[in-house]
Length: 387
Image (cartoon, rainbow, N blue to C red; front, side, top):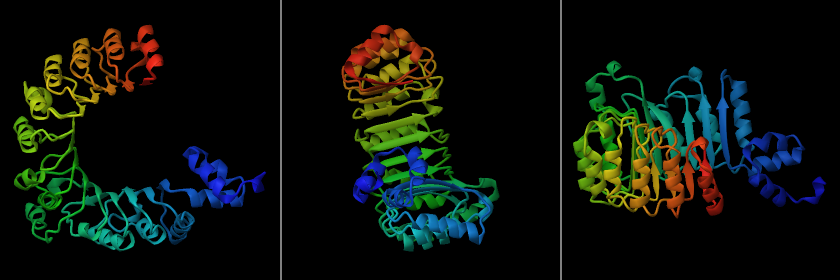
């Protein structure tokens, strides 16, 4: 049976199989294992210690047998040392064609990242952790990079302000090609991040997670132009005036807005009304996990956001069926709705959404909130339900 299939046909079959079947395929024969490896373009690996020469060599050999690998997620413990992890050398030596790299584990030093850039000439996406005080002098070396996810580690009290400030003028300004930028753990005293605000003029998508500041707001205000997607999650630095300033700067150009678990959403009454008017071109809105958010705030925002195709309200437990009613009256183009873990939106509210949103393609909600009429409409219109 094996000889009936040519290499190209087997490789095409392997590409269509789920990742969970890879282990079984590799056991069929040496030929199948070789073809499986040569057809694999994406891997997610967890490489535990100890990190001795034997294990590093084995890791390098494993990667070497995947010549067309373009995407790699690698997770390692801190045993190898924070800054110059030996796994990085293996990846750099064995995966010259890599396009996407995600490194989980200890922070990586600026020197290691500069050295990596010499091996990854085609890398377009990078996710990595760095230590304070951090420098971004390695960033221009990745000439093909368009997506960057940067997580800053170690607490601020251990770092002197003079050290943080020393990185401000340590890099020459060079226009970067970044189009998507994600930052986690940034503080108001991380002045080095101003380099990104000054030199990332092509960024259209910005995501900030667990951030306490922007480093330099004056540079950030200039950076905003051209932004089409803004995602803020658990960011305690956000103020209503700051969000209104963003709205004025973007002049209605924003298409996607996420304010996930942001206290300012419920602390400042009327804020969502203003944002709805400023961002009236929104297509995607995510207000998930704002547990104290009330109907009035959401309904008033939806009045101005009639072009929404995606609305996520997961975990907003105080919202009621009134929001569901406003949703279908105001937002006629909705395709994706997430109202899971919304205790106040009951069976009737979910039924209103499913029966009256004619363009709906996907809804995320608890199964016990689906009435018979709602289930019938789901089957009739091929709506995907995620419970």
